[in-house]
Image 1 (cartoon, rainbow, N blue to C red):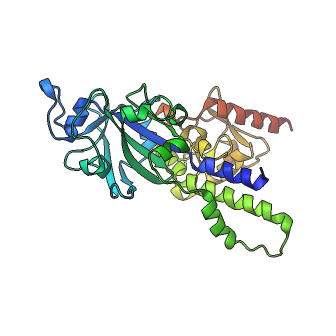
Image 2 (cartoon, one colour):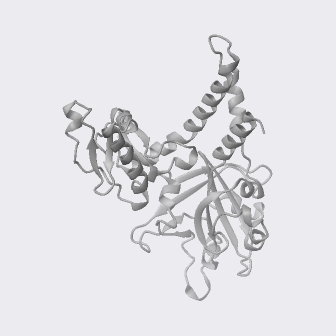
Image 3 (cartoon, rainbow, N blue to C red):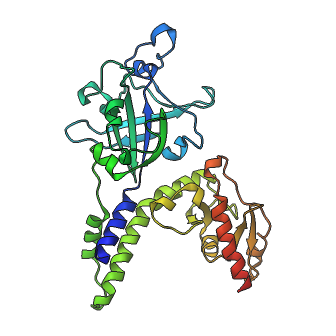
Length: 339
């Protein structure tokens, strides 16, 4: 395999990092979608789909970010563009998340015209599926029996055994759901056509190609990553507590290695100058105390004054900095002190 082919494959695999939220519908959920109460007075009249409480096993708050309303992509020959509205009511079952009113405002992917069943079969219940790829959202459903017949290697972890979950969706799973995907190669070809080095140098083309593709990957993930960090850190720098949005950046604790590293627990919201110093390991965080450490090489009193202060800690545990990643960064800081 050529070097270029391997890079193209790696880029495509990174771009295809997708998340799927699934819920295996109960009879209550199904009846709510049809506007009828459940048998024996067990509810179902609210006409919402109950999803569950946000927690480590079901991180719906991170999945949604700050987008309580998702605009979804049409499926050719099946359904039009749709919209899903999510809500969490603190007074309902410890803050259970809901997909609001799927009776009058049923998503087009879950209507009879799209093949959604008219009757509930407890031996073959429908799963609703919400897939997020970058900034696009796709909605599907699949019956339990059909799901069980898919190749095991294509299935998101736990989808057969657990009634709900959020996991990575493989390329094979997206294909089974007829979810279209684009590779970065099309975008690369467009950008490459506009890339004109000052002087032709065959040896520079490979570096230029890598640079362009890497740039595309970063742009696709960075905006959503920053938005989630702004929410997690209440729009303030984790180290200086600066609230000026214009200078707040999404910093990686473990350096960027594709979409898999664009997770909130691998990020810190940092003021631009502090971001640079953090990347250089001139500022770090002690993993045991989560307090700020500053290299004596920084002679500016405004930085030295940060020494020993506590960082901002996100309210939700799933958003807090990964201590292993912090510990690895701190080792770099200690090596830099001894250099």
